[in-house]
Amino acid sequence: EQQPVTTGAVTFPPGFLWGAATAAYQIEGAAHEDGRTPSIWDTFAHTPGAVANGDHGDIACDHYHRMPDDVALMAELGLTSYRFSVAWPRIQPGGGEVNPQGLAFYDRLVDELLGHGIDPWLTLYHWDLPQALEDAGGWTNRDTAYRFADMAASVYDALGDRVPVWTTLNEPWCSAFLGYTAGVHAPGREEGAAGLVAAHHLLLGHGLVLDALGGRDEVSWGISLNFTVADPIADEPVHVEAARRIDGLHNRFFLDAVLRGEYPADVLRDTEHLGWQHVVRDGDLALIGAPIDVLGVNYYHGDAISGVTLPAATGLAASPGRPGSSPFPGAEHVSVAPRDLPRTAMGWEVQPDGLRRLLVRLQELGAPTMYVTEFGAAYEDHVVDGVVDDQDRLAFLDAYLRSVREAMEQGADVGGVFVWSFLDNFEWAYGYDKRFGIVHVDYATQARTPKSSARWYADVARTGSLP
Ligand code: PNW
Image (cartoon, rainbow, N blue to C red):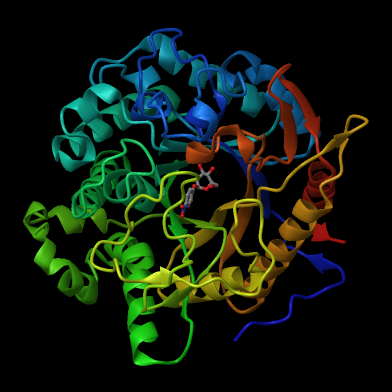
């Protein structure tokens, strides 16, 4: 089923969006300023052994202080859109009362973007839950969904007049299953079915926000989900069944809830013995399945799935040092089998055709207009005479974009793409070791240097075509 990736010039339709993405905790720093209090990621990162090298986001890219220069650089690179997230612990430090100084930062950011002709795309939750709310149970506590809707309303009151596109959650699969089941992301809980409970409450939060703020003409609403393309390693029942389980937990659980207001019957059956389903109350799924305007698609790689536990299995839980538990409750026996494909510095397979297949499938499943809200790669960058000539990342982005264009030719309605990431940044459990930026950051000096991929992407954005 893999198709060869095209070569030669490829043109995208007029109006196609060329963006880049970041997230608050990964770039902002200023962890203790203007009323901000710790999030679960501050706590987790400061827990010995949780993050590579003991790295944390106290300073990160110092974007909080360098925001105007960073926006000027985005404009220089010709980005038409910028996807960022707001830090809940700046907006509601204790999870409740609003902190005007925290909101003011995003007010300035939005004005700065608009002043440079860049569309702000705002994500309400990219993983930084106030620690105070985690202390009350975090996403395993239903009340957190209501706190989230409350926070969202405050942000919307302040910025709803200027931000055209809003997404509720970034990658709830990661928040739920890496955070509460595998324990490799904050809050570091390894509690099996807690991931399913957290996933439901995250989705409920999404639904409550749509209920309160959605359905207006002025702005678009959506959610960014992270997908895999799960292929059985061989056409044998044990592997086909395993791939179905991974597809169910990773993709369809979130997709069916959001697009159709139901959880997939097979996933409910596979996880029934875990006793989590009583948290789903009457009416929840109707809220969760409310119409959205855009679907954010985050895609890095697919997975070759084996139903037999492999000794050298890779990739099930992202963490440098700690193996963690399986992030797939009810599918603990499943392994990811390494394929003979090139890999990025994350160890992730370079598999551009997976993105074409994914987008075509999502279209068939009835997705609204899709935006690839994240694609990109970490590579070992080298600064030579002030230049980062990242031909590997450039080739990766080129191949994935060709795949997007092919999907569009095959009927997928895709309105634009966002590279992950604008800047090198705090790569969660991997800390600063892994660099995803099209702009290099020297953390000692905070100097920004656009890599070759950034110059190339600027040309792509300017011409709307791949050379
Ligand atoms: C996404 N996994 O994270 C996030 O949205 C970004 O914040 C992040 O920097 C980027 O992708 C690169 O990792 C993920 O283990 C982290 O499957 C881990 C996984 C998936 C996505």
